Amino acid sequence: MAHPSGDTPLIDPNNSSEFSKTVGDSPPSFPNTRWMNSTTDLSRNPGIFDDVFKKIKDLMPPAFEGAKLSVTKMLSSHFQVSHSMTLNSGSNCGYKFGGNYVGTQLYSQSEVFPVILGDMDANGNSNAQIIHQWSDKIRTRLLAQVQSYKMAGYQFAMDYRTQYTSTTITLANVDLITNSGICVLQHLARVTKNLDIGAELLYQANPMIPGKHIGITSFVTRYRGLDWFTGLKLSPAGVLNIGYFHQKSNSPLQLGVEFEASLAAKETSATFSYQYDLIKANTTFRGMIDTNGLVTAVIEKRLLPLPFTFMLSSSLNHAKAAYRFGIGLLIG
Image 1 (cartoon, one colour):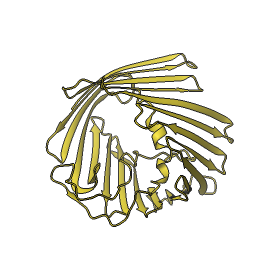
Image 2: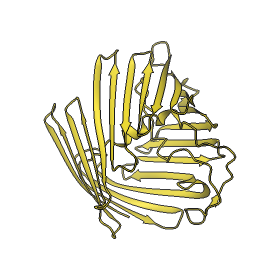
Image 3: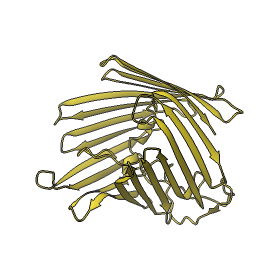
Image 4: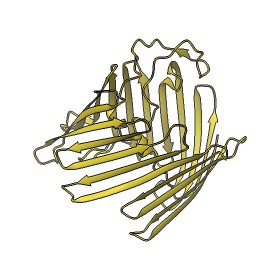
């Protein structure tokens, strides 16, 4: 959720799979879990507002610089830990420890709740996220961030879904003493089989803002085709986003294009990204190029039957004549 005010979420609150679908009596796909009763058919639910452009943004390669080693260990069917070491000249250099917990409530073949995610480094920086599905209609997310052993911010979000609509309310860094904080209300509805329409209202209060508060509205629409979809997000403040995603059925190639324009800043940019999966070679290619002269590519090679994934990352900024290269190994 990118905010025109410049505030961004602490952690991606939608780093989970698509909304649940009604399930049958098949056995659970996760050990030591149980199916939860689903009384609402969510197969035609449009998803949440923030996920309109999610498939396009997921195509962008996760570029990194330097050397990276990550080891993941399953301690049980519900708990795993990870150890990551990054060596580069940036601020994210060093060791990081992470832990993930998944509960026993199964709402679909790929969604188990509650989910608890967290990581921390040696400098006292940590992130935590708790996601829970209270019913087939209500889901909550609590996120927090600590920097140098001090609370840097927090965020709470709740999704309410019906058969054809999704409504999300988000509160971030609310402080009643200083009269500051952010509140975001989002609504997305499926109007026809192929058309979704939604709106967003962002309200921010801060003594440092002229007038001490500001409100910004945005509108979004998405049209789905057989093998593609296109989305448009417009804000009366002069911010325009247009996206296009294409993937033929059973095709290993995914394509995405995104155009952004800001009338206030008088800036425009376009991004083209792709992902190609070589299934027989256990290899994934991701690439991106934008109108600012940035070219990025990442290759992921799964070294089966070993639980290893080898990664190569490269990034070239033509405008700044800067080049970055990364090599990584994921174990587990």
